[in-house]
Length: 345
Image 1 (cartoon, rainbow, N blue to C red):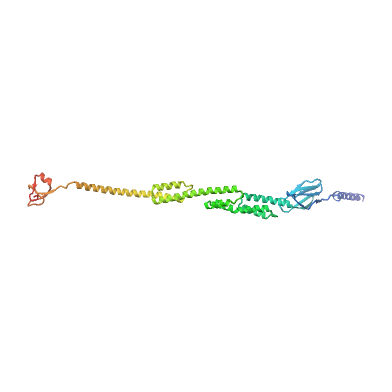
Image 2 (image 1 turned 90 degrees about the horizontal axis):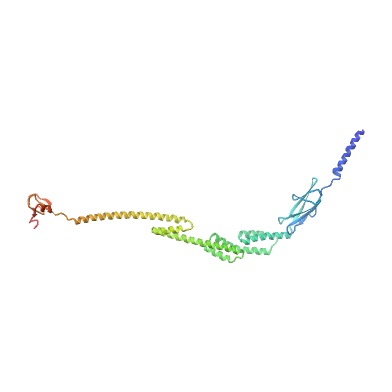
């Protein structure tokens, strides 16, 4: 019986000891925040201050920070102009506590940030005052928390430059003399980045001059090709080829036309040669016939007479009885015949 009571007393003492060790005198976790709502400085920073158990692990927005015997001061910076809920978490011996701190941007921080953003978009739009940059600046400035007269005035000046930029861009897209003149007139009204705008208009003028020169060269080449098409001679063809070769880029249409002219000239020359050869052959034939006729005209025809085998006379016709036959006068004379008194009175 004494042994049983002794064992009970021992275990009862152990239970009391453990209870005292683990529970009765245990420190509770705590977290105190100095301010639940704070406002940033002009630079957009704010300090979260608080206190917790010395051995606590402290995290602010999941980032572990150091404490000074449980006290902490942590600076944060806002990256936007909206309120931000910052979560403070402590872990003490497995016990976790959380609290939120509302960080508000100060009016000076808002104004400073807004003006900085406005300055950035305005500077870009003033450097290159086109429609896209103006629209971006207008959208941002319209969303500002308050109106700034100087910013509005600068935006208005940019807007006044939009017709100038439109005219310059139109001349850059289509560099004609008319568009250049309009751009030059508009440029006189410019006050923003005039040096760069003047450079652009100067480049446009150079392009217009080059374009006009090419147009004149093309017109001259066209006229030369048309002339060669009409005349079909080598001189006009060669002139057209020279003008086409001087063009800065190949004109496919005119090149095809002048090649056709070259073929037509070749065909014309071939036809002219054929006609000349035929004419020469005809002339040669006519000359040969004329020569033969002339030769025949210059050769005298032998005089024919009538003779008989035994007669002493030659006659112009059958004169009396006898066996008459033709003979040349030379043959009759060679036989010693004399003319008939009747035939040759």
